[in-house]
Image (cartoon, rainbow, N blue to C red; front, side, top):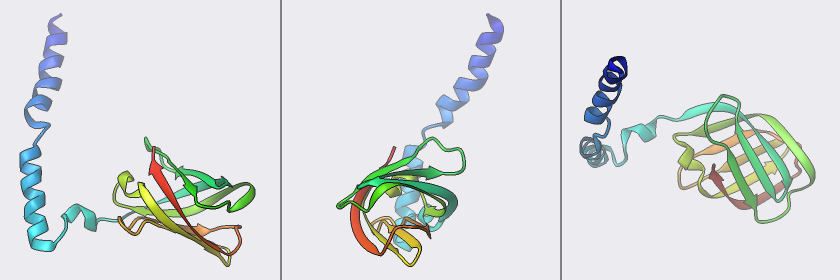
Length: 141
């Protein structure tokens, strides 16, 4: 029983004391916004390889690295008649939440580009889908 208590004190107590620095973080973020107009962590843009699976007016996708979320959404109109799996896409984002909400997708000349204008996130790469520009809505699951 004593090793359990020792583990509890070593693992839980420091977490309880230092894990939720919300007032500090909020203060730091507000100072950063005053100085630069937006939080500094939004200046970091991550790029990861990924994939998308299109089927009718729906799509799903994810990264080719182990993460705990995936992407799913719908287009306003049907973009393909058969299931299409596209690899070697580049996901650019700051956080998984960047993929929530409306986006605009442009397909043409063998290229695909999905852009979330509110957050600045995007997915780019090659695609077999013909020339189209459609809007849609997505969310990270």
